[in-house]
Length: 165
Image 1 (cartoon, rainbow, N blue to C red):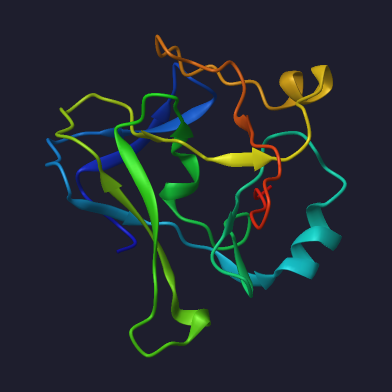
Image 2 (image 1 turned 135 degrees about the vertical axis):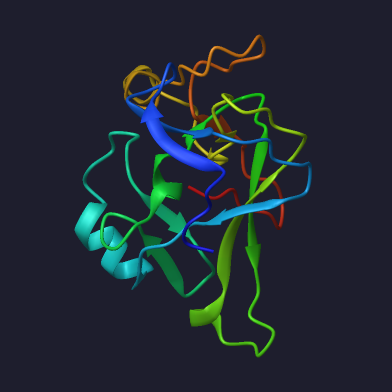
């Protein structure tokens, strides 16, 4: 779902550009797919690995692929993060089992009124304590009452489990 007439890119109160509902969206409704060119994790690291700015258009699709919305991205790349989001980003596995055909779908967590900015939690996790520089580079400006102030989530390694970053 590349285009959805219920959403539009506009200036955001959160950060730069954002995506706003221009018509009501119902809870559970699929709003838009997160699109861009598919690249491997190695290519993503080689291309963007040194840029720890907190501002990328990369979305981990699965263990093989990353969606790079810097190239052929759609409106979904402009959806900002939020600590009290009204949307969720979910990976939908290809029914045929082809990881190249998995999709990232942005859906409504609740009813969204026309005029509301869409947000989802980017869920960027780290196993290392968050540094002052990372707090600056990955600052969150969502304005939610429960805002963490940073897009990163500190999740220390636990036996058998590794956080993603």
